[in-house]
Image (cartoon, rainbow, N blue to C red; front, side, top):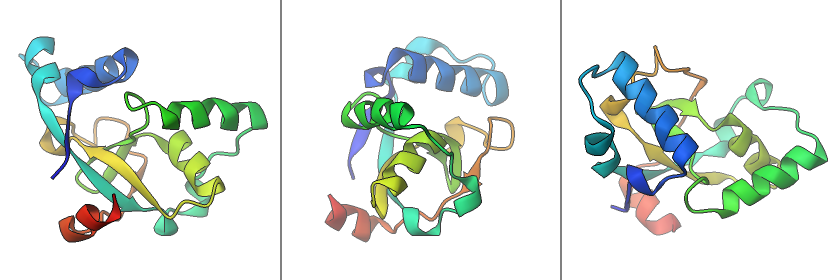
Length: 134
C-alpha cells in the first residue's frame, strides 16, 4: 500500500490538518510527531459524488486547481475513513475533467470528521482495486 509522509505535504495543508488533529483528536499532539506519520493513499469513486455537492468554478479557478492537482504536495484530498474533510474543489475539477477515480489520503482516526469540516461521504475502492488503478 502506497503511503505519504504528512510532512511532505504542502505547508498550508499539513498545518490545517495538524490543527484539526490537535483541536479535536489529540490536544497534546506535536507537529513533529504528526508530520512524521505516514498516511495511506486510497482511491475513491468519483461517479458517486453527489452533483449538488460539487463547486461551480470559474475558468480561472479550474486552471488554479489543475495546477494544484499536478503538484504531489497538494493534489490529494483528505478523508477520514469514508468522510471527505478537505478537497471538494479538487474533486469538482477532477469530475469536470471526466475523471472517475481519484487518489486521496486517508487520515483515519487522526482526524475526526464530525468535528473537522465533514463535507460528504465517499466510496473508497477496496485495496485490491487501489493497487490495480495506479
